[in-house]
Length: 249
Ligand SMILES: [Zn+2]
Image (cartoon, rainbow, N blue to C red):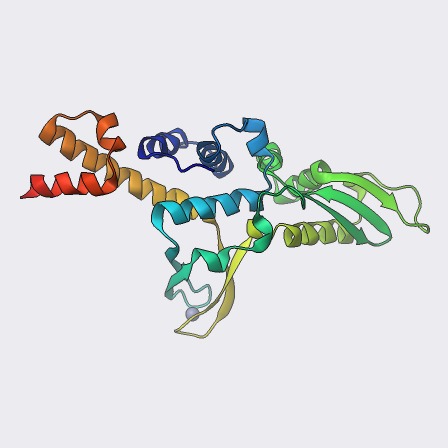
């Protein structure tokens, strides 16, 4: 992984305007791995993608995360402060060795691979969460074998609901970085719940703020000194701040 330059980050963010979150995730990965093909990046599991996005976040904005949640019971806003390391799971590395799981349920052994960006993109346009999930399972199931007592194996679409649920659950366990949840307690009403932390949408929103701030700095320095955008963006943040202070004096 290489850290994108300020200019590349602005371009990535701009290119993601109007795209879906999954597509934005792929743009970010492409900036981290410029030598990888689009197809290779689309075949990272969601947990692998999110592990890299956590690393990018750490390197861009630091290891401490400040966020807010809202109590689903009483509506009280809750400030969240945690470290990236607390939401990082060990299984999220990009080894590629754990991309398959075998699920045993109701007499079947089902070999599946873990969902990737390519899979989510393929089912993204489908109406209805149920049909999208069924299509996702159909894409990810590699083989279905019955045990000795069962008859001929069904197709992925005819799996009993209990088997499908077991597959979804074990896929989630095998790729825990894809679905990070924080155990929260409301200080006002003591309600306890699990809040999802989605690094992709969180980092994208942070990038949006950073791009707005940085382009405002570019504007101020360009007006004051007549420097080119590319030259200003190639400066360190520290040096931009230094010149901005001089302008302000
Ligand atoms: Zn509450």
